[in-house]
Length: 77
Image (tube, rainbow, N blue to C red; front, side):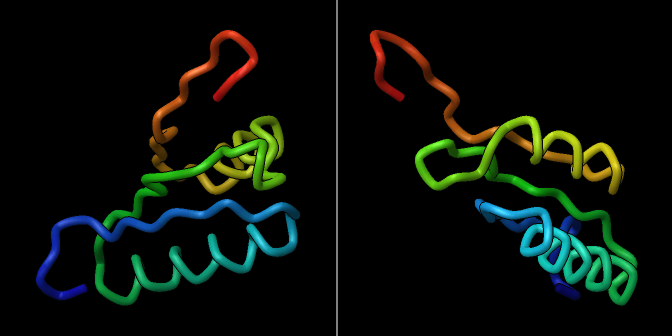
């Protein structure tokens, strides 16, 4: 963490409780190393990681994010 400008992680948790544990750990690392954090991969319905829940928690934590490869079409992801 000392060698990077930003701490990134990705998370596909299916519940708020599990997601909060991961977000809390990311926030803790950001504070420890005085670095911004970014969730660089999230939201995957096939893994039970609903968009609405994820966006709600990202907003609550005021966390930067990147939705990885969102492609929807012809009934396929």
